Image 1 (cartoon, rainbow, N blue to C red):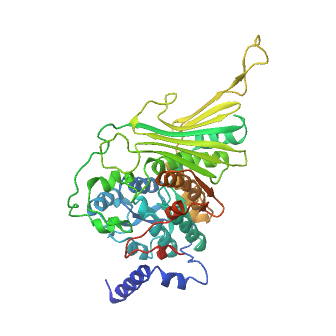
Image 2: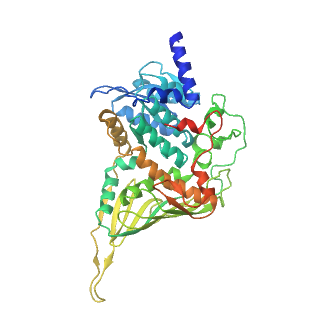
Image 3: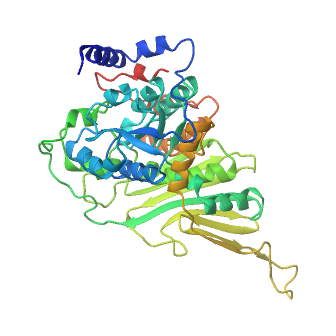
Length: 453
């Protein structure tokens, strides 16, 4: 590296360590313009978080033929090497530049956008810093670990005029779009109740209960933890099972529930619930998870379509389905019931009769639809919006709202009572203990102030 590049790198690292004050000051007169992309220009994309989902996002983007890979970042060398093997045909350089610290990747002037496929507790900081560095962002769901972080991500996207797409790809599936249209058009009548659910059975071992041990030699465990509390390494806290620990994620409700609840927000034209009441816990699984094996959250909503109740259920000790479905969404309307999941949708009419002697008639017409592609059109939408500078299908503001709802369920679970939510101000009403859970506590040297746009 040349002395000039070394100086620039040190300067950038110092600015980001200080909460990106240098970048914010430099951009005070206006947003970082980024590169103007022509219709045929290849988009240079870096990957931050080279696990299964991050690599899946990268492969989908590579299939479009519109991108090249500008760099790969992960705190695990083996994860990074696996991603490099998948990306080598689409790389700007051979071999592909690898990074352990995402801030070094963000410094690369060739990079137009980044994919953030890290664990949830590492979504907010890279997204905000990427926006400050003039990069567009495709960030996996759930958008953030806390509601406060999500709001800061929205602020950064708006201030620096960045395209930020979240991986709630069902919004790009045509059969989900049709299901939403059926609800919004009134085909199933007035919807008073919606059920979202994930049912499984991993009793009794669950994810197992391995002892704490030394981390793999190629993994920087301290960097993996980042702003999360200092913990000894445990295999279940890392990679595939991190979702079951509150330091890094929110369990099934923020993992899968975010996808389902996002569709409810969309179909019912609702931005937030007015209350959340959760019950549950780890009742029977004999593993070292923290998140519930049994959970029910009841939400009250006001919406343009009228008031309704939504319930989210997760059980990990019994997989008995509802009408043959182990997960999905039921919209219960006065004229019909609509079910939708990734495999398709079905409208089932309610019946009525004027008198006892008359044959029952349907209140609406039955309808079915098969599955549609969701992920590929979702990444295509992101790349298209990078060129047009329009807001994407799963814009950061939309997904901040729909991710906040699962978080409110977890907050209610933690405090052990119903909470009331002012969605306009994004405040819990009259509950100091619950309010404290809106904002994370960061471990040094990471600071909450780094999220300030």
